[in-house]
Length: 358
Image 1 (cartoon, rainbow, N blue to C red):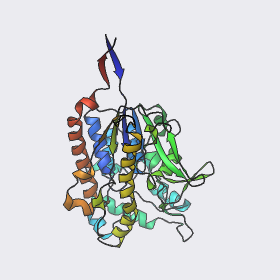
Image 2 (cartoon, rainbow, N blue to C red):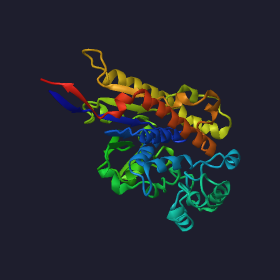
Image 3 (cartoon, one colour):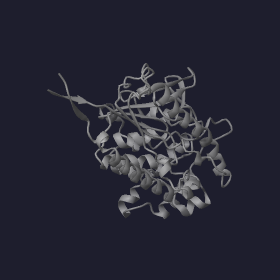
Image 4 (cartoon, one colour):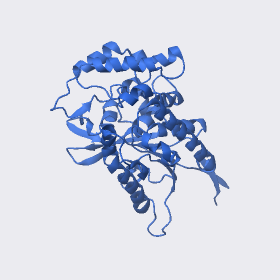
């Protein structure tokens, strides 16, 4: 007699902000290849990519992911001022009022309604106008501030928080609790905007996010990959049959001589994360994905090597927020994931398989 057995597939989305279009492109490819996941666990920028994939606001997941690659700054401007003022906003109540007054919901800079009006791509002059608005914005930044930027004020305009609890895959995000000195995991029934802001609160860029009197920083600052939901004794999905890992930080080519002072500052944040990512994957494989009695893997673990698909000559630009880099990375992620899906089609396409029983 044949019995149908449900197989569970998990997806781990790692941290990494400037090169996150790699993940966005990969998720777009999964959509086009009709690959589905039962469990998604995300950290850092992977949290936002996962939510654009699973719960976008007023757009299809494919459109939301592609638009993320369009949030880069025009190359002409970026060469003069390598800062993504469209993503990182000035902090303070006055800055919030200014943004709300000059940035209607229909034309939020993250997704830019100008794209809908004037066609494909982000027009350079709209980037200039947004730079002007950013420059004019007031700010309460001072030596006493706990972070440089406002806490992702665009979130409610791109993520449908009302849909998260009912979306199909189980979904987990992490943030580190500074009061209790432990990692906190929230599931899809708990996640609201404040939890996502906590998961994105990278130290110095953002002040810690306060939730119920507790202070949180980005989980990816300490654990770039959120494996906890798949670890026996920590999460309820340790029985997952196949685990797909998207890591965009564990490539030693990210460790390089900086091009300028700003590049050196970015490198100071990325440098420790490279080894953290490498060690996390190694530890999970040895301690939590290997049966100690048999020495065999507990589950099939597949790593989609997105960074490996980036050409050597492009590596110095990988952490840039320029339009050309973000769109280039999206295309690389898309192509790499498409090849990955074809290579592992039997594993990824079929949620059920049959076996003989009795």
